[in-house]
Every structure is written in structure tokens, then in C-alpha cells.
Amino acid sequence: MDGGTRPSLSAAVAVLVLVSTAVVAATSVNVTTLAFDDGYAPLFGKGNLVRSADGRSVSLLLDRYSGSGFISSDMYLHGLFSASIKLPSDYTAGVVVAFYTSNGDVFEKSHDELDFEFLGNVRGKEWRVQTNVYGNGSTSRGREERYYLPFDPTADFHRYSILWTADNIIFYVDDTPIREVRRSEAMGGDYPSKPMSLYATIWDASNWATSGGRYKVNYKYAPFVSSFADLTLLGCRLDPIQQVATTRSGCAAAVAEIAATGLAVMTPEKRRAMRAFRRQYMSYSVCYDRVRYPAPFPECDIVETEKERFGETGRLRFRRQRRRVRRGGRVAVVADSNRQPQM
Ligand SMILES: *[C@@H]1O[C@H](CO)[C@@H](O)[C@H](O)[C@H]1NC(C)=O
Ligand SMILES: *[C@@H]1O[C@H](CO)[C@@H](O)[C@H](O)[C@H]1NC(C)=O
Image (cartoon, rainbow, N blue to C red):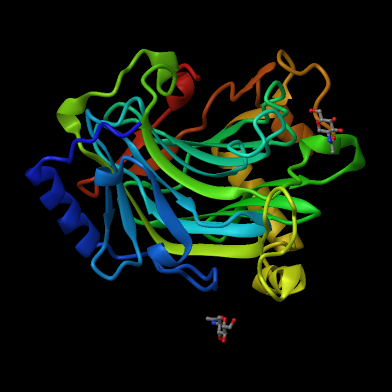
């Protein structure tokens, strides 16, 4: 996967400037962060992975020779996987940044996976975020949801977190839960149940990312730089095959540590915030896609007032007008930007 070619000097300089001037937005998610080398290792495109001087953040580049990625050094059974991420700006059609957990390398036919995927766009159009959940090789039952964001994810760092316990999965954007999947008997093996690694990657998805491949990556705008800071890994480190704890304290300490963050608890207040986010920013939900799935998945929380706003393909019928702050600080009204075809 590695093109083996180092980025040009100008690219390297651009990245150094980006990394050294990075100011990380404070959020109230209060968890211990790791130095890159204490929890992660390069995965591919090594020359396109640039550590900050203090080793606590890292940038992944995509240029015409290679994308890049990193992986956690351990696998975790349940956990909190979190990072503050700043996405590449300007023209990013066809570019995908992914922050996800998977065990596909170990369990080829029965893998589990939890995804945040960030889909680049043509200039002036917003990035979109997709979440997905797979369990025990349920690749024929994709559980996609897509959202716009209440901020420009290329302007500042924002924290994206995947919380996975034995009972529920919650995707967070900063302090706002945007999706919860509660385990139920009916979900069976579709609920992820085996240790997973954390991955972060940037790659050329010209074939499908933007308007079904209509817009390709334009390398005139390369390198595309995505930066990762506030790296967090909490969970029970396990050997995936033997499923024995590789940490001495076993899983109890990890379970307690995750519980102490409070992130696994969905308070009424957090549920209201989640509903409000989804009402305003969700552009597709598998739960409302009656074409793909005439019967919704067991974990779907069908909100009648929400449902009527989505067509039978699960896509938002019409996007409400909303204010959008442009780069120059001017405020423009963007209406119906849902027009662009989805993947
Ligand atoms: C963050 O957590 C640590 C220990 O877990 C605690 O000592 C500290 O007061 C917390 N900070 C905030 C702002 O909640
Ligand atoms: C996972 O899938 C395999 C078949 O690939 C099946 O034999 C097994 O029972 C499934 N496990 C669960 C927990 O559903």
C-alpha cells in the first residue's frame, strides 16, 4: 500500500507548520491521553505519517503516491477510542478519513467493526460523517448513518469518540452523543463481541466517496492532511484468539476506568442532546431505509416525528435552511444542500 515515496519538501514544511500551530479545542471529555508511540504504530504510508515534535499528535497525509494510517498496538475488548481530529481543508472530493475499530485482520469472515468515516467534498460543500456498526461478519447488513456537522471540521480540532461496552455503543462528537446502539438479544452476533484494534487512515476513495465517484481526488490540492491529537485508548487489552487479558489487572480495572468516564451512561439530558443533533444534522439513517430493509433492525429507535422527514430510501427529503459561517466570517444561508447524491 505504501508508494514508498516521501512527500515533497513543500508538503513536509506545510505539515510541520500545521502540527506545530495546532491548537486543540478543549472539551469536557476528561480522559487520559497517550503519546503516539505509547499506544499506536504506523500501519501504511509510513513516509506520510508525521509525528508532532512532542510525539503526542500525528498527521496523516494523502498524496498522489500513498495514503497513510496507524493502528493501535493492542486489541481491546470493549473500550473508549477517541481522538481530536482536524480534517483536510479546501477541495477534498474523493478523500476519506476513517477513525474506526476492527478485527478484520484476525477474523476475516466474522469480523466486528465500528466506524467513523469522514467523506470529503468539492470546495464549498460540507464534509459529511458516516457511522457504521458490524458484528460477526454482518457485512451484508450495513448499519450506516450519515450526518452533517454543526461546525467546520477543517477549521479546528473536534473530539470524536467511539464508546463500546458489553451493553451499548455510543458515538460522540465532542460532548454530544450522536448515535446509540443498545445490545439486544434480537441483534445476536451483529453486536460486536470480539477484541478490536483502533485504526485511523486517510485514503483515496475516488470510486465512491463523493457523489458515487463523480468527483475524483484532485492531486493539485495535495497533500491532504488530517491531524490527530488527544489520543485516547481505554479498555481491556486482550489477545484476540485466546481472549485472555494481557494486562495483569484483567478486565475489571478497564471496565471501572471506562465507567468512571461516565460516557457509557445515557442521561435524559444527553438523550435530549442526541435527539436534537439527529433532528438537525442527520441526512441518512438505515433505520428509515425501507428500500434496503423493509423491517428495521431490532436496535432501531424509530422516532415518528423524525421518521416522516426521511424518504423511503432513508435519506432526508429536504434539508432545513441553516446558517453557515464562511471562512471570511460572513454568514451565508445554505439551503437544501442535501441535493448531492449520496454514496
Ligand atoms: C479529570 O479526571 C481526573 C481523574 O480521573 C480528576 O482528578 C480531575 O479533577 C478531572 N478533571 C475535570 C476537569 O473534571
Ligand atoms: C458468528 O458467525 C458464525 C458463522 O460465521 C456462527 O457460527 C456463530 O454462531 C456466530 N456467532 C454469534 C455470536 O452469532
